[in-house]
Image (cartoon, rainbow, N blue to C red):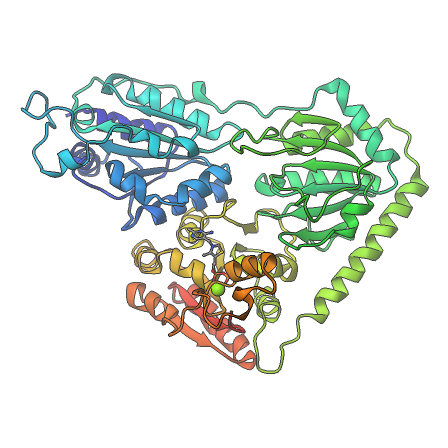
Length: 570
Ligand SMILES: Cc1ncc(C[n+]2csc(CCOP(=O)(O)OP(=O)(O)O)c2C)c(N)n1
Ligand SMILES: [Mg+2]
């Protein structure tokens, strides 16, 4: 029988969706029937990935989309499963990651008026007023499938919206009766649903921006996520080299600029102090950044000229946002950067000024580099986050993708990995913890040829649902290395409290409620759930051997490895 559910799967397939990350319930009889029918009759359908928790399902789709740019489908159970998406929907929304989420909905008939009518007690419990309202604040589009007859069109439209910048999650619900409906097949031309083409700078404004940068004494680019497009960093390198522009990353979620380039001026996160490079800048190009600086403690000087180019310049999903820009543009970063560089081809550029700026930034870069190197020595036997990251760096090759959910070690990881290849670094793009586990599965499914290394805080490891993650990783053969920056609890909330109450009761409390003693056997959870290689590392001298053995398990034995690395406790 060709039902709405068959048509739904067909639409996903024509749209190029490879995977269905699914957690089933009583709302999905038609979907299970359609999937089984496709398998039995050799019809194409997205590959089914059974996900024992919805947050992991969405995080896996998130990772897949980050690695490929392509939305996958996540299928969840009515409003309960929607709630269990938990913070993963925040991460997908904030990270501007395309994904299509489909949830069933309670049947709306109870006397057998239609196929799919209520026949289980939960159908009354799961009847809620506004299921779509659960995620409304986090999705770009949400809709209810009201008939199977145009379900294909709705799916393609939803995916077009998800894939158009600024990208993001979309959510569809379909009640049981609608998903059971027998419908005629409808042919859909996917090319008619292409994402909106990338916007460019208005041609008559390009020159003014390029000339302001060329005439500046200390021009500076601030960026966070232009590297989500792997072509954009190269476009940034060309512009910056041409003019001698420094690059400062703020809360970087990608490799936006090679960390070894002399123009690279480091990255900033939560440091409660003024960044001198930012303060010295007279012309700034803020490009693709949600938090270019934290103005309370760190900002450009008042007379600095700021140009702002962003795929999402108004941050309409944030209630409070402003930077004092002379002009703001909605444009695709790579396109805009190429326009700026092209405009310089015919401009007269002061070569001596470019050389001076380049030398200035190169000297600062070198100072920063030696300061970082000095911090990489272990403190006796004690493993510091800096030492750990430096050891990991030696194992990061050209085929490695690193996931950073290091929390209080975010910046240490950015600094001491010093990655240079576009696409080799990912973060959740948001702030709801636990993304990295599911994301590692998604990245590995998308890029089976790559080594995937997930770096996580111990708290974030527990948030990631390691039992679910490691069961899935073995079941679907997605081996990755997970390294726990284990400081025995939640360091960040403690740092936040001390920043506001440096001498209060919290500063003297023996137990703030942020520690995990007695320590869980983190790595053992992964071994039990998915047969992962598991090792606890407590001494600096043991680290290298552990990394070699763990990577061997991942690459040769094709199983996950978890290193629980003990750092100085919270
Ligand atoms: C889902 C979720 N719950 C709670 C928080 C608040 N939070 C922010 S950082 C943090 C601690 C994380 O611990 P860990 O991963 O070990 O990192 P550490 O701060 O120790 O480096 C918590 C609980 C959050 N961001 N997301
Ligand atoms: Mg911790």
